[in-house]
Image 1 (cartoon, rainbow, N blue to C red):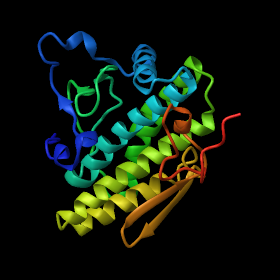
Image 2: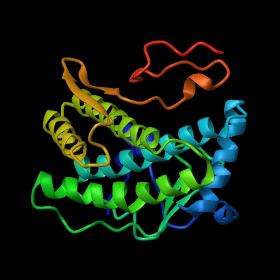
Image 3: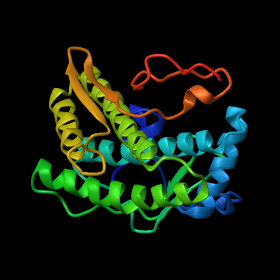
Length: 237
């Protein structure tokens, strides 16, 4: 399947395919417990925090954003949903987009007959096939709120939509922009994402207000995100 156009949207939408570059294969791990543990360690160091809940939250939101971006971008721009849950996806815990994900044998799911069917494919592959196991693994690794993590997944999905929607409008592709919005609206009807926040349609594009906080304000020098439920960071006790 054709995934090269995704890189034009932005680094979070890009996806390496095929074999890992020579000498780098050992760094790419299956998307599971060990990769997550190493990623949380990496994020802990980069954020300069000692609170592993914060690092786990940010790590989960980051990988959710990558998965949503690749899958949603392909669905909208190529009309096909890549099969990311077939066991061929690899994650490099030390790298950032676009070099953190590798799909060794890219294949597409069967063509969907309508937007509802395509949204169902996205939900089955990304939400249930990948994020549910990662949600469980994250909570097993670190005592972080499950509701917070699903809020992160919703925020990541909305963030992917904003970037893709803006790109489509700039490229004079209004139908694709509308399709992206319709798919994401359908995904927010999934029980795991429903209630994580509110998606608004504004003249400037989609906006999202979440109902939980990712804890980024706890990072040294951090603050609240644009979609945060908190209007101001809590005061230190």
